[in-house]
Amino acid sequence: MTANSAAPTAKPWTVTSRTVVFGAVGAALYGVLGVFSFIIPGTANVAIRPALAIIPFVGLRFGPIAGFFTGLVGNAIVDQIQGFGFLTYWNWSLANGLVGLIAGLIAHYYPEPQSQSRQVVRVAVISVIAVVVGLAFTITDIFLGNTLWYWFTAAYLPAILNTALVSVILVPVLDRAWQPLANRAGR
Image (cartoon, rainbow, N blue to C red; front, side):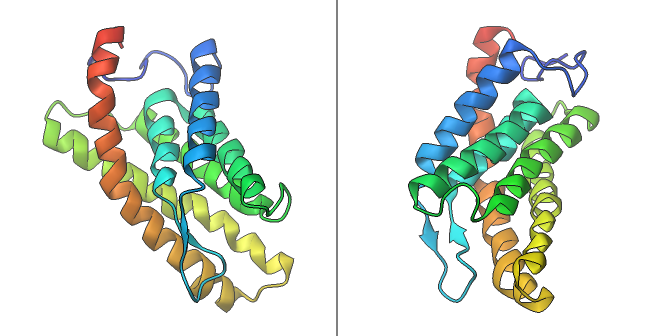
């Protein structure tokens, strides 16, 4: 067990006080920092939102439940603060929750390498996979009146491109910044 692994003996679906606390802190951070976003012109309200990196990071380090909660609740908070309400983009909140859940599951089953450079690559790859798969849930936009083509070109594709870019850059940075704290806490 390395100092920065997130409790390898725990099952991924275990809910502990640590899961609840880190999920709530992640959702609050994402909710507050998520308002610092920039709508991409020509898209279906797709925003460049650097705070999105918090979602896969929480999933990677604190498990799929904490990651799911961070994405779901954090995105709902951002939508509420920005005036969209809780139900306008419910499917995007759920998709962001799935990003955290998928990142947590992949991290649980894909062992952490010893090399620091490989750890960075692992974190970046897991984040991108989680973004691509999790945000695919937004295909439910077609049930809300959008065509498949519009969803793919104006919503999904811009969302995965900017979210993957943010994740590739910021999730490894968050992970590196977290490791000294995790070492100090004995994790």
